Length: 560
Ligand code: SF4
Image 1 (cartoon, rainbow, N blue to C red):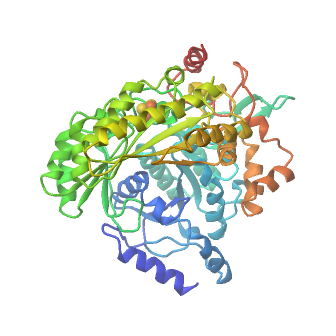
Image 2 (cartoon, protein in one colour):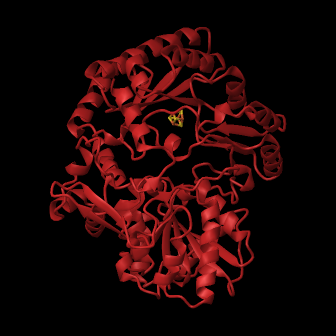
Image 3 (cartoon, helix red, strand yellow):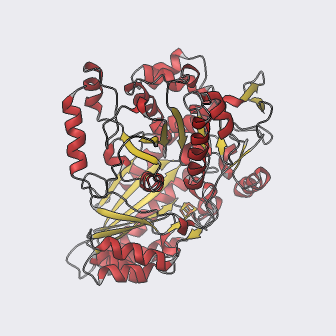
């Protein structure tokens, strides 16, 4: 045990407000594991919600663990210290359950890092009765858990609040009966939304696609994703505040869940259907209580502007001389009132997502905003003396042509002209930042049949945009690396054989190129292949609440 690491954990706790510390003994113990560093994990509302919810039961103890900073791995290894939780600094292997909350596929390697540092075997087959149960949930595995199914005992598909309570109940009963791990999992598998990969067998056709996905006898053929009908029943807001998160000392509160707009590329829309709103009274009380402790409230949701009580809530915060932040802004719903609240809260940047440059492509992806909406939004922002506009774009979308890419350049030039005009007579001139990401066709969306664009082609498209705007002042361009989106596509659309690539990449210290070379699985098969309409996808066994035929019809409509 290395005391320096314990000391660091204690210092982290000392800066937190709201930590829940419970005595051990006589409780079911659960460690929530976020597969990224503290700074990132503590910005995730899911972690706060589950932490609060599970700790609200007197017979459950729930603590947190995050990925150590890169340079700390060696300290754990050199000092023979097993990774431990923040609250009690007890090693993870002493817990009954380790629950991973996974938002991004790119964190999959970190799951293995956490298990390894915790001295827990990586593969579920190697873990017998004397290890904690390893469970996982979150949007990434809810879309497609298969690529990490070799490492996880059980998945919660969909929204976890209710399912987790049922899981813990089932665990307690099994423990009372002295069941072994297999029996514990067997009992849990009957809970709606729970997927135990060990009870399912996959066979493949000679060309590599799935032939059959078969449950063992007595287990459901399809897993129904869980969703919460009344989100008011659960507290989804910051439980712990700390200066060490992305949203330092900001109190985050979920205002709505899901989105009603239906962009065809958007996993959030398809996974979190239907759109649900939190009641104004509920939100008002939460905000009032929070304002006694913090100076800033962040309203979270995929479609915050559609909440009819947003202005009232912002007003109540601003009137108390405190600040607001809003998670997502749609160009067509942006209004002077909201911008004024953001300005009063010291916001220097407003972000919107045109996604593409051409009206044609916007129709393909079903993004129901127009060029006029984008130009009007820009003018409103400048009119309210906010001089930095951040715009999110995607490249590599279905049916995209070079003309569509050139239209991004034209749109930005038009926008810049618009902004310069609106800035006339003001002390400052508006600036634009473009954030460009490669499109990853996600499972459970209408584009699940579509291949990822070629990495070379994506790099070329980025070049066209950069060259087209290089003579323009006050424009900044940031972009992801298409080669990383390639890996994200593999991890998001793979079947359980991809687990071997993940394991190899982990063993080679994150060297994906070497993993691709050493493992006899062709990643292009998952990334670049146009799927046949009848193909069985690795995630088809999940009932996401929307028929595959409907998704296919949407895909066809997009292509048409
Ligand atoms: S508006 Fe945003 S959250 Fe809603 S469907 Fe479109 S991309 Fe998704």
